[in-house]
Amino acid sequence: MTNRPSDLEAPPRVARYTGAILLFVVLLAALMLFGMLAEDVAEGEHIFFDEPVLHWLRGLSNGPLDLAMKAVTWLGSVWTVVPLLALALWWLRRERYASLYLLLANAGAALLNVAAKHGFARIRPTYWEPMVHETSYSFPSGHAMETMALVASLWLVRRHGVHRGFLVLGVVYVVLVGVSRMYLGVHYPSDVLAGWCAAFCWCQGLAMAMRQMHR
Image 1 (spheres, helix red, strand yellow):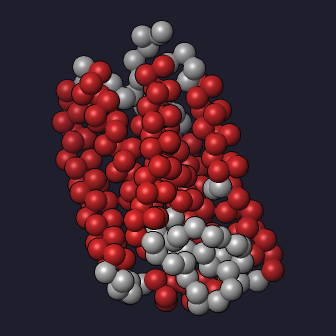
Image 2 (cartoon, one colour):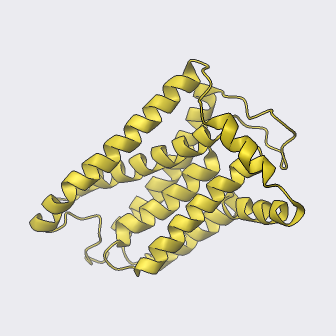
């Protein structure tokens, strides 16, 4: 087992304190947003921005864009996410600590998504016939959670050693997959936002817990 330090280990004191406030604000905002969305969904309330955003995206629909969004949504499916995760695990094969984190972060996000879907049991949008067929519940979006968990967990283990361009690419990937789920009519915007928030908080929380155990 290699002892090469990973970005999951506690950073130097100066870096730890300078980033603590920003991390707290981001985590708090994500937790609060998820909590508000989850409360509205649990109470069966309509979220004010869901319908307008879906109808706006519907108005953009055309043949070439439909095909492009179907391709993008496939890039966020298990058929793409799992191979990408496997590739990342192979890349970090000599770093068991980081590999364990990646595996737990992504597997945990998938399990949390299944549990949340069945817990909230939100029916998918029915404003029009969706462009792809889905049979599971809607809240939160699995594609949003899985892609966010993949990108967030990779960033957390290598945020000091990865070119900024890869982070930008990861953000674009997550956003486009989320938009594609709304465009295709299988998720409300609140499903996607909740998926992003839940996955980010889970990955960051797990990283913090593992840092404490690794000390």
